[in-house]
Image: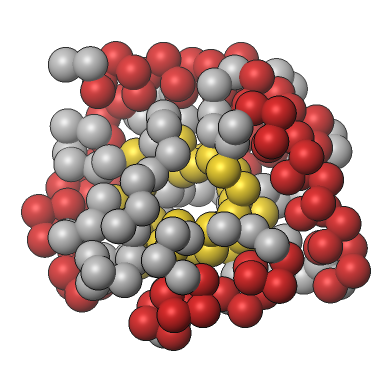
Length: 211
């Protein structure tokens, strides 16, 4: 099992919500302590995606950050990234076979039942949500809230990262509920000062994990 980047804060890109170029947001996030970014640009043409991945990997290398892809294992391997985040229902066995034992492999889930089914020999983590109501991905079911995250954590054999509506006001509460980390997307993509917001989240994570 591959260890999660530290702090366990995954920044997911969405250029449609971004108020500045993605490489600038990545630079700001990494400068504030984030060390994990996943590129979620599924509608981007292949050549443009390749260019974006190359650009963000250069930024990530300066900070020792892990760069991954929201997509398929075949795509991630072709693009030269060592981390892939799979859509709910994906074949994790095939993805692990494609990516190899050293890669970071995660999958999206939406319930405690889903959490119980994730094989720790194949997946390194799972992202569960929506934790709260979110502008970024409406229509993904009712918000789980803290109780739903806790119920999933009790049944999961892999670290869970909470996603959906996570911000400076509720991030810290995910850890007592059993989450191993958090994911952010739209709030940071839209933020006037992403470095400030990421810094606050890093501080919140540090405060919880230091207890």
